[in-house]
Length: 636
Image (cartoon, rainbow, N blue to C red; front, side, top):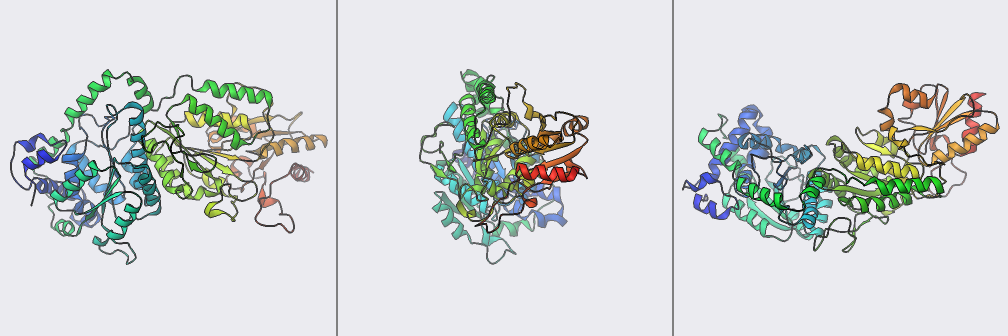
């Protein structure tokens, strides 16, 4: 039985004003029919098979949009609006139809980002990103109070989305954090024709999410009463909620849908529903205008850094250049992060050296950066946490940072590619291990870390990969990563203690151009040694050996390929020189050919033979003597 207008007004937190003027059954189904007509009108009958998910979820979307979703078409960027994630490509027709009927998009992020475009990611990333959105809401509410931050995150997902690995990793994190303002509306797997026989049924999915700490419901997707009751249950729940929607009957209805367009009266009803949040928005605006935290709220939500955030980092950088301590870049990165956390309150570090998250969102929802609560291991949540960081960035109000082993970069690759495509400000610290084994053990223990990870990361468009040579370059890399607003950054650091390579204080951030001449040749250049990371010290030592043989060479530090590629070609040629170019890195040659040219040399693990009778996997690093001998042979 369809819900009446009177029941509608009582059940919905934000009932449409038009509904109060009518009294009759079938309002929901009439509006859902208009939504289906809008989908079919956009696609055409010959493409209706591509919109089965959108057509089947029409009632679900109708009840959510017209009764429960907090938004106002007059202000699509209202900071306290509910967030919606369409976590699958199948939802694109539904999104387009809803945008048309409500005359606005509810999914735009505060910096113009598109929360809904997470549907373009691999399976499970949409759900994981929604977990990040809910985490951001929890964090901001803890800092600014419910008078400014009081919204929810909704996910409309296909069956595959709640069965993919990253989604489950993030779901377990959401359950542990008790993200009660997160609700997932997903289709039930057994309702879908043509599925593989191995696809889990709804009961298995419900049991799995219940074990993660979620509240669960199963409903018929064509019953507005069941839908409304389930959504009301989700709002009252103290846990995240999964609602599985059986789409069998709605798919049969979709086969006979009307593609003639939306009747004018229903179009007006949808437009009226889109304006029903105006009163709530205006009330929020009044609270916002009176709030003493308004300026700080604006600064954090729109990603502006505090005015004096560089002071501590610059002071530390000058101290490092003067004292020249022997310090592992991983340890230097931890010290830099400590300084930045004190200066940037929105910085959210979801990592620590042991690979466990210092959980600051559980229980009383303490502000970010507070090392309170029991640690939650992220070792088994690499993919889910990586995508959740993207959700935190998409929401606004957080500068998320994650950490893992460089050997685990393949786990993070889908999330990094998505963050780069969406230009999200996310920072990842990836730790190298010179023994060839991942530093945090885990599932990759006993396997070589691989030489190709750096090249694979550098192949991702719009991802900045920093590989600092010493603590000074670490400070510069962090300054660049934190101040970047148009994409993610990776800092590749290692735990091996190495010498300082920057011998004098320089106020300028030399790493900002991606590469620079660290040590010029004592006379006309005969070769240029180009290196990154720990291999910069090897290049400097090789320079001394070559100089003793009467060969004048310069050393170029190349901490960031992407920034170097963005520089003027003439300037790059001046840095690299027109002589023999030798690349030195504990990686593969792929990507280096751009800087070395056709006649250049690359010296890396592939060119260094392993020691005889080596026990276990090893990564052979170039040596100063080997580099010098290679250059001398080439020049002779």
